Length: 525
Image: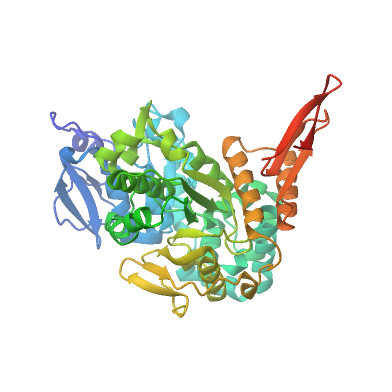
């Protein structure tokens, strides 16, 4: 059990808990092996981690900034126990535990959160619930029975359900079809072992034993279909994740990019951006590089993901205070400002990033990109989809453009398109041999830039508004369709004859009122 303990007072939690349970309760000691049916408490002034089933203590270092002992422990638990990990977030102030929840869920674990209505201090439960990753949100009194029922249900390793699921192609196809119909994403292109294990988790939680039974449940319960979709899209990300990689990227690519490209606009693409931390990190790094070089450049960072909820969250640029543990102090004070229990990223950084919903496998790639970052997304795709994505990246990048992949990813056999700059950090350079989009199944006709301008403006509109209803979805599909036909400019007129939505650039056009009525028309000047 990890608590926020005062360093100035003796904790009596061992004595208090011992009176309420028959299980042995003790303070954790360095190197202590975890045993079943025992309770371990973190000592004051210490951080606690677990490695190979043993507990290890370290001194808290407040000079390094905010210390978050719950996040520290949960991250180690996620790495050590994987799918066996269960994180329980109870009453507490602040947002400690939020990053740990993401790590546990990203490694296949389970999240249980106290219903904030029952919490004396609702900061931690609300922050954990806001991630959208909680498997159970319960009052504490209901947690023991639910956890006992969950852990006692047959698991994949013992009952062979996963092999049966993999062999039932028709049952899986029904699940994938429901997801594609609702979310326009074809998960059959993802690695089967990955998606079936996550389906298996939801089947365990919903107490369904057969993939066909679960498909029927998805048809009857749209909320479960949405939950499964989010289960597939768990994004484990953070600001300045893997600092060594960003240091290398700066010295090997960013600094040169800023100084060697004249005065033109710099264009970056963060694919699979999730909730936006990496896109904003790159914006900060570029801003710092420009300051060092004594120059100012226009920068456009396209940050895309198929998860529209994540995109909307990212566009707001407001993050829990726990991000302070990931961001160097000089950047935190320079590019963020505190807003109650959150940090808001500065307007100067937000304006460098355009967020948009984008399907990496299906949608056209962006063009004339200087740097593409796609970290830990390819590992979820099947080999054919990986090849297509890497070809699209090659098409997107300018000659000698930079590709950054995740630590578990590689270019594979695509050595004709990319060469390593730093293979260990997964930084590659484009050879400029993938400039024919037609060769990758794209549409070679027309001007790709016109289509991209439509994507940008749709993205800007999407970033500035809340999630809309069906009307907005219809408008967006219409704009996507006409941009695909390379119509450079389009205006949608509402029932009052007013221009409510537009695509492309309106440079050279003007709108005028007519006859005192509430409608406008567009005239070429």
